[in-house]
Amino acid sequence: MTHASPAAHPSIAAIFSWDFSRVKNLLTRDDKLDPAEADARIEEYRKYMAINATFNTSHPVSKEVDDVWHAHVLDTVDYARFSERVFGRFLHHLPIFDEDGQKKLVIDYAAKTLPHLKALFGSLSPLWAEARVICMGPADCNGGVVQA
Image 1 (cartoon, rainbow, N blue to C red):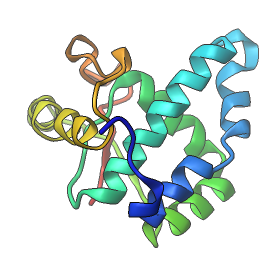
Image 2: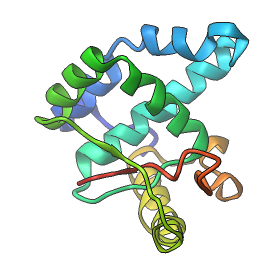
Image 3: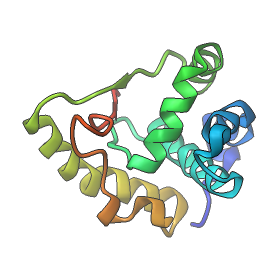
Image 4: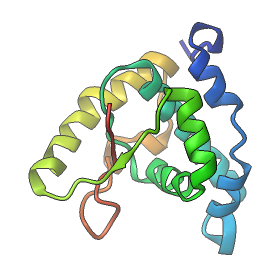
């Protein structure tokens, strides 16, 4: 399968039809990202949210996709509406503060995130490469993880 079918899951349809233009503006402001890179990351963020809507488990996220999530969370009103529409509740972004949690993220990234992305969308974008695993420490983003 190369793309999840929106008809198969109404939440996925909502994710892929959501307007992320304000998130893109945050990502490209002050030349942080060029527009094409922002679009690519937003597309992968959509996929990430789709696996969270489909599979009843938490999923560690790649650093590049987590940057999109951070930008979306900053737009609190839109993020709250998105969470309610897609998940039926507010989806919290929870940081990991200790080394044991960080180790679990690395394991879960390979055991859950990557296989679930492949199951719904086929091949993976380079933004999900094992080499880019996830946020790897307090100087980064503390390894955000979804609370299922």
